[in-house]
Length: 221
Image (cartoon, rainbow, N blue to C red; front, side, top):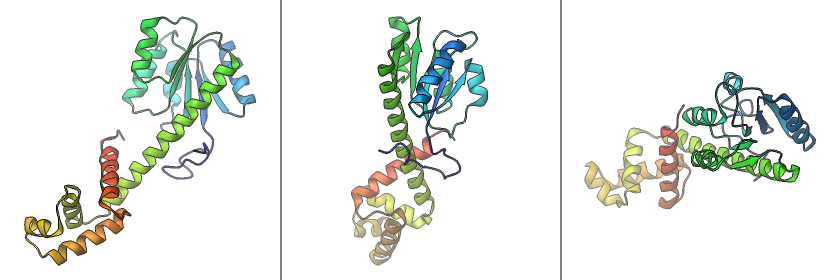
């Protein structure tokens, strides 16, 4: 997937370039990482604390976070937890000089993409950031599909939604007609219109789109 071909809300809401957000209380580390990653063509922004990051965090930005662990105030792990509670989908790459096995295990359990130690080899850093950006693009693509599915579902009339719910459950037109107390011909009309609004041609496609819509409804706003 092309990293620049992701747009799940609008051209104004989503930046055309992914962002690499570096969070580290060491200014020299921030500056060095920013310089290296900008030479690779990335848009890089640095933050000296977890609190500063949260104060400026844009929930509609996409990209990845390169995050230190041991920082004054909120630690990197605490920031990861806070972002998870906010529904953040940005992949997190930990980069720390104070790693231990329990810390690494906790970070990975909470969904960190990788856990690197300082000093990190440039090639390893670049490859990991690229993998994180690809992961972010994929997540946004999938979220876009869910958002579109929810919008299509919202366009259905109450009867169309009711008929399609029966279709997804595997009911035949005549069975749906009997369940709803209406004519089979009427069911066919509602089914056809509903399928058209959902932009699907088969029951299998309808099941997938309805599932995406349910996932979108369950996501934090």
